[in-house]
Length: 127
Image (cartoon, rainbow, N blue to C red; front, side, top):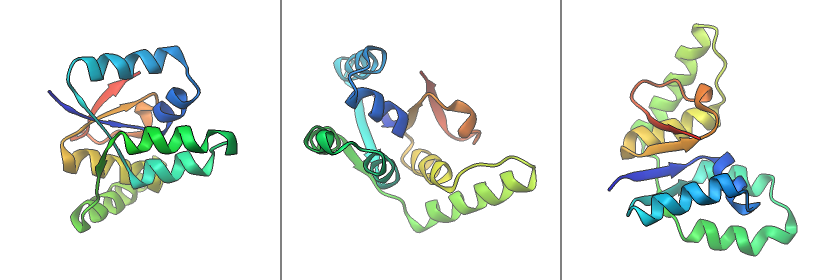
């Protein structure tokens, strides 16, 4: 079974009950995969969270495995952003941090925004 890092957009869709993402997450769980999140994703989710969704958000986040970022991962994220910028590709620092966490933990990133994660070392499940 594999470790899956859920991107911000996936968590938001699950919290809103959007069937496509809810059923994907349920299929992953039913297949025995481990679902995870990280500080960057949680910060992004909470930044846009509606007050009425606070308890539901807390419950969802607490049900996921927590992935940390090491110093080497932080350096990788910074270099990823620097190098992409030098090539004329604008990536957000948040997305570079998420990618670095995914690479470091050997997780499959589950996202709708594949174009935001061009790192070749990152495994991505496009939704």
